[in-house]
Image (cartoon, rainbow, N blue to C red):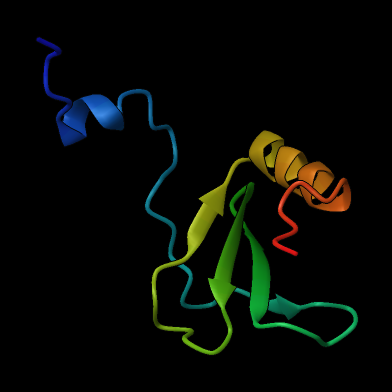
Amino acid sequence: MAESTTAEETFAGWQKPELDLSDAAWQSSSRGRGDVQIAFVEGFIAMRNAGSPDSPSLIFSPAEWRAFVLGARAGEFDLT
């Protein structure tokens, strides 16, 4: 039988700090479409839902952000 995974094991190696996003300079899409905003904070990239700015933000390292952007450009996340 497989061992259960605990939250501690799931996040092992997590190297992202708790960022203070209260003074972040949030940027919207250059085309002004969608509900996503990003901010560059302490060497990380934060992404949030502009329609719910108090909801949790996703935090990306520069390498993760690059992979995300390249995947989006390649259509990896197209749902149609």
